[in-house]
View 1 (cartoon, rainbow, N blue to C red):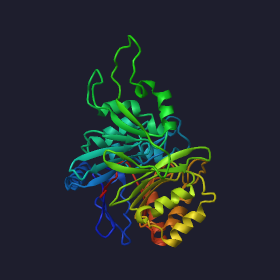
View 2: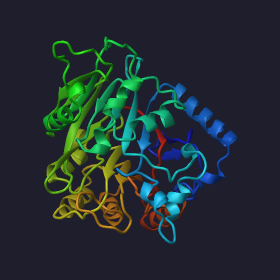
View 3: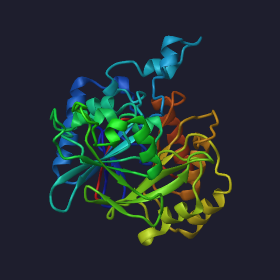
View 4: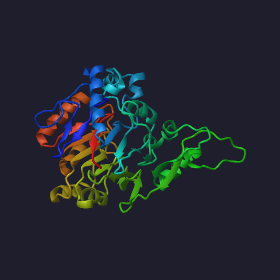
Amino acid sequence: MIGSLWMIMDNGVLKDLGSESTSNGVPSALPAETLKPNELSIRQTQADEMASVGGSELIVLGSGSSTGVPSPLCLINPTDPPCHVCHKAMEGPHELNRNYRCNPSLLISYMHEDGQRRYIQIDAGKDFKEQVLRWFVPYKIPRLDALILTHEHADAMLGLDNVRGVQPFNVRNEIPPMPVFVTQHTMDSASAKFPYLASKKRREGEEVRRVAQFDWRIIEASLDYRFEAAGLTFTPLPVWHGEDYICLGFLFGEKTRIAYVSDVSRFPAETEQVISKEHGGQLDLLFVDTNGVGLPGGMTHLAAIAKYGAGQVDLLFLDSLYKETPHNTHLTFKESLAVIKKLQPKRAFLVGMTHEFEHELDTRILAEWSSREGIPVHLAYDGLRIPVEL
């Protein structure tokens, strides 16, 4: 919901500035339908005040799956009984509804040491335009300075054409191109899907047509590789997205080290070690996908990380597509909680949920799990803001 945000306190505790908390620090359930327009205004004021402090922040533009929530099929061809979550996701303004979820995406509002704010987005999927209208407008995001793609699937890059909507208007495309960081595999796919975006050459006699202007930059899918996007340094984190496909996550931040891994079925041992040990090891934030499979052969590495304290995660974002249904190219809810138990983060958020998750109900379920296990775990939601120092 607009204006609800989290703040990492000096002692490392993550404080929800927009909801009450239980005695163990886990936010209490706050049903979307209880929010009123005046509460929206108050929360937005709180968010604006935090932004005016001058620090960086992360904004979850999308916390849902590739299909998102609500699922169209559940509405146009309802089951008997109908899908409770999808129908609930249609209630009230979408910005106030934590069950309404778009494609996974993260916006980094980065306050550079030169005093200038830069805006870096990870992934521009099918819901890109909707995410811009939902969150750029109320959060006063004026532009994008760089785009990073995790891979070439539809929920990560089919919004590329709509990026022109946030670029300066010029009918002859005479604007500075925005850097877009991709692997060669993703570049090849983008060239096939969007040839007019990938090539700046025009055929003889071809008219100029306004399209998004990109400066394509090839990055390596290697833990040893570093690149800068709008002044912020990133390290690629190769992971398995199904046993036949390598996807990238990204590690970034110096004062607060953050890992974003949105599509993963299994972590290579080397990637786990980098997330845990590089630069002294400790991660402050970790964004991970948990859509469906187990961790074949991986639990020994996770257990080793936890046992030897290679780097306790302060905040873990773990995508959880299904609660019950298995999946072959993602992790699932039970595996997500198992990973959380193994890694022992100080706090965790689940993202990437389908309609199997109902925000209020599963917030209570996670609160009980958190109290029992001693690890606060919450459901993320579209529009979540997290102030950080990068």
